[in-house]
Length: 560
Image (cartoon, rainbow, N blue to C red):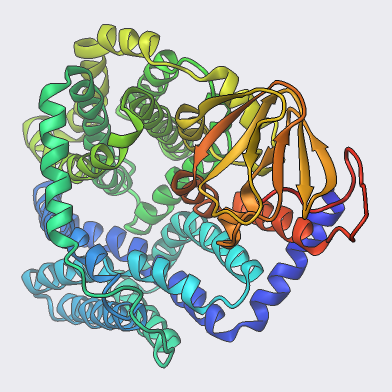
């Protein structure tokens, strides 16, 4: 199995390399990622050097608010315009705006630099939705699409670390202006990479912006009616306040506390990003567990790390504590979002998480304003201690309710274990596997009951919990399925009619998983999509011959 998977992955990446258009899209996105994070770090350092924490905080808010307003509109437009046009225009505007920052910095006109930074950050909101729409449009095979999704994940993870190092090195070697000049060049190269690709709009001009506003209003009304939902949103907003403050705190630590050069701000950001990357790989331990203690523990560790920074632990200690802060923030975010997901009915998840994104952006802005206020009142030490107190105060206010919610929120342990036993879902992240498990509906079958009929459209996927089911194709027996196997994925993944009939051999229990949710989670996670494509391709490639009776475990196409 492992050898076949390795060969399949190698083949997929070879196929990706052969698709020049897809390589151009990914290359452009990598350049964008470096530009986005390095310019954000540099503009905070520049604002802090010109006017201290107050100016830096207001500059951060000035960038966040327009971006938050524009982002939903851009997401709606992404379906109605050619993604190539949207992506290229966004990169060009970003390149011009970052070049304007470089010119303003060189000319010594900070207000012009801040205005250009707002334009650059706003333009950056087009990149992710346009890129997400463009990759499937230029991929020519499932293997290419899967490999591209894996590459995007690598780009995002590496970008959080590499951009800090890039900003630090450029500041150390050539000064702040060099970060903006190089960033403008990178964004321009990204625009050139995607210019000339031809992809039609992905949908007709339906009005999606009103739908976005409608969903936001429904989410607000839902939060008003549900106290426990308000609790979770408040906790996640408090977390966003800390994260919004952290970028500015890192600049203060580098320059004012450690008395280091401006380049250290980039290096410290890399340490925080490295902690986040490491913690993301460990998030699987949260699956199927009660989350009250992990949430409280991660919050206290994050707050403790920030408070310890106020003691002046030196360069090595600061790097270590920021790595811990990045890791604990990531675990806190995953655990809290998972508990929110457990606490909300599946049909309301979309509206709730849409509302959460708005609160998150507001939290970032509030954190950016909190830091200069605390610095004005008591200096950098009070700023660190004040931000460190945000989560403990939130825990003190709602900790008992949090544990009560955690105790009452259903944890689908049996369903999680069943999904984890299937190779298809083995690598799915913790929140995703819990979301699928919570949405499963048990279906009890008497012996002889037809579950799937060949030729019918596919609307569900079925993990088998108990009993045995027979798979027949054109009336010929193919194989017998039991617990630890799933059926129905081919029709969903390939958008074709059911390829076989499935009948209960004995009394059996299966779980029904809706097509839309199945596809959302499987296609949205690169390793899982890779595994799903491999399973579907293997089963479709082997066809039963007339008269072949097969047998349990025979290497024959599975039910679709």
